[in-house]
Structure formats: structure tokens, C-alpha cells
Amino acid sequence: MTTNSDFIDRVLAVIAETERDGLLTDHRSRGLSGISGLKTVGLLQRLQRVAYPNDGSACYLEIGVFQGLTLVSAALEAPSIPCIGVDNFRILDPGGENLSIVNERIATFATTNALLLNMDFEAALETLDARTGGRKVAVYFIDGPHDYRSQLVCLLLAKKHLHERAVIVIDDANYADVRFATRDFLLSHPQFKMIFEAYTADHPANMDEATKRDAERGWLNGVNVLVTDPDNRLPSMLPHVPADRTLYYNEWLVHRLRLAELAPEALMLAEAVVYRNGAKEGLARQMLEARYEKEGARFDQRHEDRNVDSGGLTLGRINSVRKDRDHEIQ
Image 1 (cartoon, helix red, strand yellow):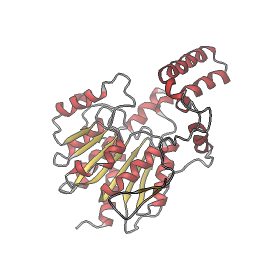
Image 2 (cartoon, one colour):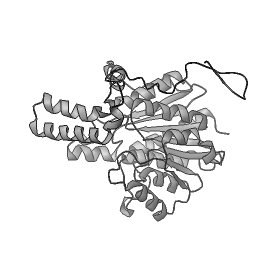
Image 3 (cartoon, rainbow, N blue to C red):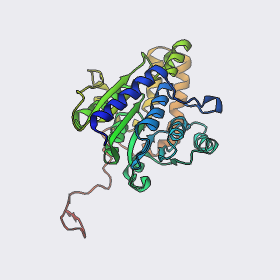
Image 4 (cartoon, rainbow, N blue to C red):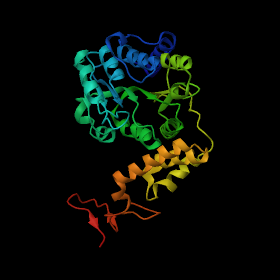
């Protein structure tokens, strides 16, 4: 029987090997590519092959599939373990091609143990029991939306689905939003510990080509790795987060405004104005106006400020012990 110490030692050994050797199996020559550091892929490969080789109660889950690099790589290393990928392909898919690419790669590599769920990650996590056949998630890769709430929800909703010896690999941990969510989860769930973290000095998009190649061979945009530790073997280790939380306080100020969804375009325009870039200002203004033209009808129904999105909410409702009805306050 695997003890907590055995499990943690095994994970530490896998991480050390990945740091030293990177990829376990290289499928790039066969056309398998994506946006993940090679060490990240290598870690997932090793966890699949080494950590749960004969465990009929285990499965693999990832949130954020993109073009299938990590899903197919994980599935190839453990053909007997179901590997579930969740993505609704709303992000990083301007041409609307990624769903077809993933399905094509699953077929090309004959990964019959890979299951793609084309759906919102929250809906998938809420109904995951119906998809796993009673198995629990032993390796969990989080690479979906990187806002604070989505990251935290990915952790919270998955809790009940996790294997008693689970490893959680959180990608793009260079982002402060991601680290804040990881930190808050760890502080409120002491039965989980961070066992490894690695970062790069910047996002790869801001690197010169040589530095970017090094990042691509490594952890790309940072990772946090968590493990279950019910016996409290590991000391607490938390990711660093900024002391200034102004950005998070500002969320309330932005969300309540009429045009809240236009914040990215508005900030692009603001930057062009502040830095006196006339060419970018014109382009940013066009983007802002185009987005408003597309979605303005729903914006126009709101107040200028202090929108609370409370339409249709009850004036009062009591949660009764009776199951036939709840009680509205008239």
C-alpha cells in the first residue's frame, strides 16, 4: 500500500528527472505541438507513466486543451488510464480551428483513452462524476482561463473529484492572478501543499528569441505543482504574490460600469493616449467602437454606474427542510 511519504517521494523524483531531462517522449516530429513548456509536458508524461501505472481508480483531467499537445501526450503514456480534456475553445482560437485540430490529433495518434469535452469548464467540473466512471482525478492539469476567479474555481470544484494521492499542475503561474488563486487555495485547504514552483523572468511574448527558446524548453510561463498531503509531511510553501492588491480592488469599480466588458479595448486606447502614439490610438479607437457596435444593445440597457445585475432575484427566500418546495417571501 502506497503511503503518503512514498507518494511524495515519487512525485519529487519525477520532478527532479523532469528538471534534468525535459520531455520523456518527443512527438514533435509527428506534428504534435502547442503552447506548453517542454518540461511541463515532460512532467505530465512522467506522472502518467510512473505515478499511477496500475491504478484502476485513477484518471487524468486537464482544463484548457488548446490544440491537444498535453492531452495527447498524457494519453500516450498511459493507454489504460482515461484522459479527459475540457475546453469550449473560446480563447486563443481566432480561426475557430482548434477543436478540429484536437480531434484530428486524437485520431492520428490513436489515443482511444482520450476524451474531449467541448464545454465550459465550470459545467464540466460540476458534472464530472458522470464522465469518469467512478474514477478519481490523479493528475490534474489546469491551463484554462487565467483570471483569479477561474483559477480558484478550477481548484475548488475539482476537490471532490480528486484521487486521494493527487498531483495538480498549474500552468502560466508567472501571472499574479494565478499565484493569488493558488495561494488562497493552499491557505484555506492545508491538506494540499505546493511541492514545486518554477518561473521565467517574463512572459515569453516579451522575450528575445534566444531567451524564448530556453523558456520553451523549460517551464515556459511558470508552473505551480500541488500535491495532497493529509499527513502534513511537507512544510507550507506559498507562491509569492504582489503586496499591492489595487488591481483586485479595481475589479469592483470596473465590473459595475456600463461598459465593463470593453475594459481591454479601453485600456489599449488609454495607453495609446498616455504615450502619445497616434497610430495605435486610431487603431485602438476603431477596435473599441467595433466592439461597441457589436454588443452595444445590451450595454445600453444598463446604468452608467453601479450596475448590480440583480434583475429577477427574489426579495427573500428561505431554505426549508421540506423538499417539495422552498419558500418565497411575498
